[in-house]
Length: 457
Ligand code: NDP
Image (cartoon, rainbow, N blue to C red; front, top):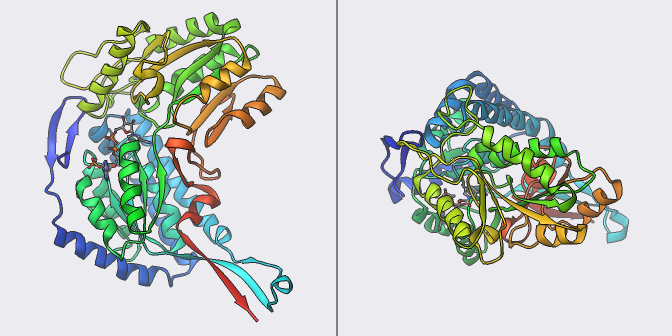
């Protein structure tokens, strides 16, 4: 994939970039190693001041950064602005909480024959972050804010279709005051990842992206005995039970499926509805999905912009065609839009069955699969019946059922009567093929730390 900004609303290539040479990458890793030596000796207070300055820059430049993201990957401008604000908030959150999250943890010294004994969190060094285009600022900030507060340094290999957002991030942390080399973007293709991971100065890697990318990076890191955190895809279930507020569930289902033009790992993708309320939910959901306005992502009244890549749109189209060929019914949408951009409308598909690709695969576009079930057990079995386990939604006002869903849904998060969202205060990550490790909260900042045991006799 060439490194270029291509406007998904027009298909027009706006700017291309030459990949960095291996010598340039080597020099960047050298700067990262030197910056680590400085950063790890700075205080939490100093790092917090720099990160807060980065948050201030994001607030001040919100509209301009948002336009850049919309131009590069097609999310609506309103969503892009919200993403910038979310990044600034997360930066401030870690500036405020990192020191407490990484405070020494004393043990009972007498029990281990010591005068004092404790666990201390220390940074581990340069971490490679391989990031996707779908939330081009947020996915990076989710890694960078805790990493920098812990005293680690970041090397960003961003998706090849968002190079200008990558360069903005490269400059952001330097402008905020962090030492040169503390956070750098490497404009390289995915073929450069394995050699970078092989460099002894690079200590770990984090990836948000597809399952194949996860397998490749985990294997390469494994050969080097380096830790990875993987945030991969999801095919999140959205279960609606008879006691649910059906109108609200259908409204949130529409947002949950179509947020970010349907390209979110934690978007609800499979709508599993109890037979008692299936028709009511289906009517409301299809009406809401059909009413969404697809169009220019820069326009204020647009709900759904283009898909980010031509290839991504082809995949969604093939998944729907495969389901239809095998007997599924399209209740709305289902045909690519006209014009030069990569348009695909909000679509609802019913009667999905196991041989269909939509049954098992993640659909990275605004396409919902509808399923009818007749019991709690059937709902849970279906919800858990994919290789993924990122988020899960359950809609029920029955307190006992809420507790059972929290227990039984096999996912990194369960949201009851609300859509899955990431918060700096809560851990974020998946189980099964959705990946491992956690981002955000105290769990996230500790992933790339050496939990050092200190025993003093
Ligand atoms: P990818 O996983 O291919 O891209 C994500 C990042 O990984 C990019 O920086 C990419 O670089 C890099 N990458 C890809 N393959 C490798 C590899 N073998 N070794 C090292 N780095 C690699 O996502 P796509 O953009 O191709 O999207 C494909 C599918 O992935 C989507 O349809 C969706 O299902 C899933 N996805 C999930 C995301 C999530 O949030 N969990 C985000 C994005 C995609 P480069 O851009 O240079 O190829």
